[in-house]
Structure formats: C-alpha cells, structure tokens
Length: 191
Image (tube, rainbow, N blue to C red; front, side, top):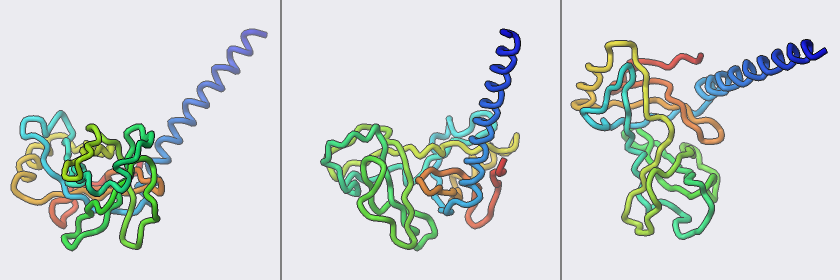
C-alpha cells in the first residue's frame, strides 16, 4: 500500500512541476504575443560591465523617473517598493514617463497612447520633487547569439539603440526585440 502511495505522490509532484513550468513559459509567451508594444531608448550601463557572457546589460531612460512625477509622493502607503509608471509615446518614437504612483495603480486609467508599467524602486523615495527615482522593470538583460555582444557594445556608444517591449495588462514588461535605430537586430523567441 505504501509503495502505491509513494508512486502516486511522485506522479502528482511531477505533474505539478511540469504544470508550473508550462504556466511560466505560456504566461511569458502570452505577454510577447499579445502585450502592447512600446519602444524604449537604451542607454549603455558601464563600458566595463556591459557584456557578461552571452548577454548585454541594458539601462533605460525610463529607469530614472523624476520624483516630481509621483502623484502620491507624500503618502505613507505600504508599497513594498512597487511603483506604477505611466508612459506616453514621444515625437521621437520612444516612450517616456509622464506620471507615476507608489503602489500598484495610478488614480486614473491611461488615455489612448499611454500605458502603465510596473516597476520596483531601486533606491529610497526622496521627498524632494527635483530628485530622481531609480526604477527596475526586470528587463535589464538581453541575450544574444554567441559572439555578437562586442559589436553591439561598441555601436551602442555611437548610435541610438532601443528595445521593443511587450507590456501585459498588469504592467509587466518583456523584451521582444533589440533595435538599432529602425532596424531590428534580434527578436526574442516566444518559447
């Protein structure tokens, strides 16, 4: 009797693990397939630390949000470091922050041509409206085919690069493609 229970427990545990893995992959693919696309300007992070193995570390213009854009800056809300940042497409084609709120939602829904993204505050919340908040969106690495990183590292210093990110309904972002100006260099596979 105990041998059959052990076998059933092992099967159930295996199915749960496979189910969790499948759910993780499918949810990422869903964001890439159906999320709203935004183009974000990429900034080189550090010339000595840009390339590690087969990925490039990326910094973003939207990662530095002026504290003056935070609508509830004085609130003592329990945010666990979460911040919602509203982006709007600029004349340059890139999306830029226009407002932000501590916690998981802004007071009003985004207008047409705007999207809310969810991030985590990397530094403390300054009360000075002229200070800058450092935000992490979880999209700081882009994996490349082996041997491609050196050329991109060099080119990022002289030309404008960007990424196309897919934004899910809850504000999570996934990198969809790396852009060199208007030219798509690499795309993320769905699976």
